[in-house]
Figure 1 (cartoon, rainbow, N blue to C red):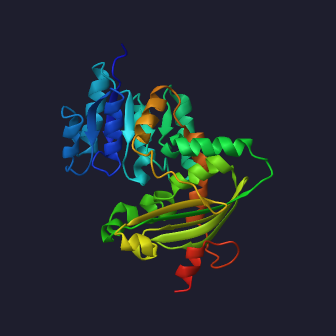
Figure 2 (figure 1 turned 180 degrees about the vertical axis):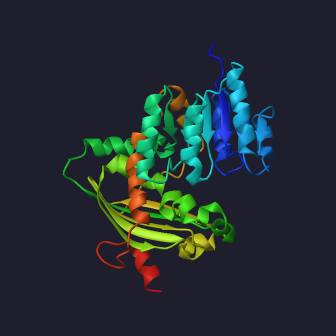
Figure 3 (figure 1 turned 90 degrees about the vertical axis):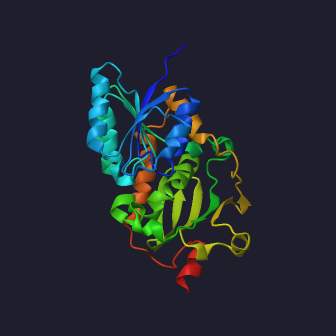
Length: 319
């Protein structure tokens, strides 16, 4: 029987960390140490009550090094920290002799990937990125269908994602462009990765609207024309969603037909870990196209209501 892999987790107090805790436990592995500036991390007790916990990076670093010197080296470091710290924490993982498992976005800038690639090449460890939508059965089937469809056919895609956030969001690191990468990077990157994965590389990237709480634009992919709209503003929710008390609305249509994948999200992080542990994780080169896309978006000058734009973009700009 295989021995459990030894994990450390950075950012255990964050929103997404619980999915990583569950994935580590579901794959019959063990969390030896975790780190977060916040000490509101009682959720650890539900998964790994014996895990050591640190609020100071220096003490966490020392503990991981002591484990290594005692022959109890960490096998994987899971990274759920703020986006701008991912690069540093990935480097820490590899320096500690561990593989890295990092949440999206892997890094904020395309050149960060090039630098990390050099470090990965110098080690025998791998940098893995969580791209869980690539493991969703509905989207896997859609990709297979696209691969079998006539190569010269382009599809019309409308992506709408509205996920309401309160004032806290903009007071946190998520609201700082230099730390989160902005709305397209922080909440849109998994959609952009999924679309590029299914419909091919980016041929054109136009931004119509770019604000701190909403953005919209047009992506021309090899096999699709994509109009997209992202928002953190509850005022952008459809009337039906508001009437039902919902604060999130997600829709992806292809040639006016809804791509329905609302179900099946529960275990995607566990599936991601299973793939990583089997040596089939998504690496940096899989992540790079979407990193380049969102970097271009946040550094664009919006063109306004020109060309092929999302209908909600017209609504916002005409207010």
